[in-house]
Structures are given as C-alpha cells and as structure tokens.
Image 1 (cartoon, rainbow, N blue to C red):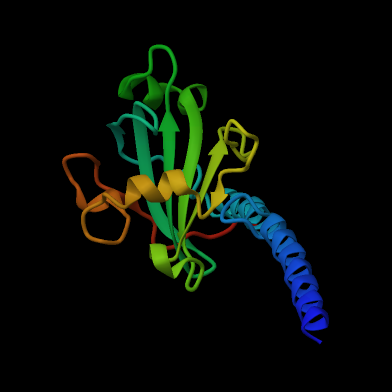
Image 2: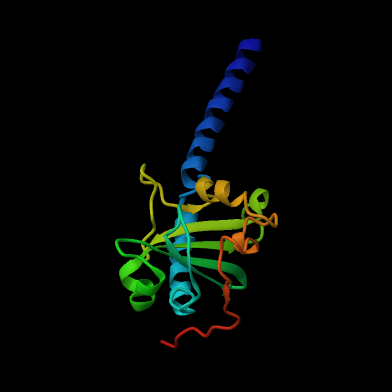
Length: 186
C-alpha cells in the first residue's frame, strides 16, 4: 500500500513539474509570448497616438539610456505610459539631435502602468524597442519586455517610491505631458 501511494505521489509530482516547466516557457518573468504580443500592439498605439514622434524637451543623460534623451507621458487604452527616446552615436548632442532625431535615435524605452500586472513592482510593464520599432533583446536572445529585471533593478532606486525617475529634477528634464491625442484616421 505504501509503495503504491509513494509511486502515485512521485508520478503526480513529476507530472506537475512538467506542467510548471511548460508554463514557465509560455509565461516567463520577461520575454514571454503574452508580453511580446502586447509590446507589438503597444508600438502600433504609440505610432497611432504620436506618443512616439511628438518632439519633447531634450536633455543630457547616461547609461543605460542614451547620451541625449526625451521623455513623454500620456495614456494608451487608459493606462499611464512613459516613453523615453534614447539618442546616441558619434557627434550626438542636443543641437544635433534637434536637427535630425531619426539619425541619432538608438532605442525607445517604455513603461506602462497596468493594474495587476506586477503588484510587487508597482504594476509597471517594461519594453525596449530598437529605433525601427522591433523589440530589443538580451545577449541570450530574450526579448526585453514585461517584468524585465534590468529595468526594475535600476528603477527601484528612483525617489518617490513609484519606480519613476521624474521626481529627480537633477537627473531629468521636465516631462512632456500629452493630455489628448487623436489617432490618425485611416
């Protein structure tokens, strides 16, 4: 009787481990299918609402973002969205970026406040796009979307307790707030 119960327990444990491993592949902490799908949708919304193209106040920054940056804040589908365009490259300066933003744009990093997404980290969803809108990746090839530990780890040092650096006026320029945006009619 004991051997039968033990065998069933071991089989149950093994089976549940396989199911859990499959869930980890589908829904990892970052870079999973759902997060990638949302990131692709989000890029389209950023383009449609022009949150990805409205000029904002340029300021000097540093790693991990570009030497020159600009930040906009608005809403997509009722969610608070913070868009940071990161500029770099040879001869990057505020003056040169003003003349040709597309030439110096290296990445677009976005934070979206999604209720219930990650309560442990103030419900922020993180994504890093390349300049062309494709998703950036880690050196291992994982997409930088969702609960990305690099973003969370850095932003935990932000004053204000909300993982947002806008409270630190010494490190950031004023945020360009975009109250109402109309999507382009197709």
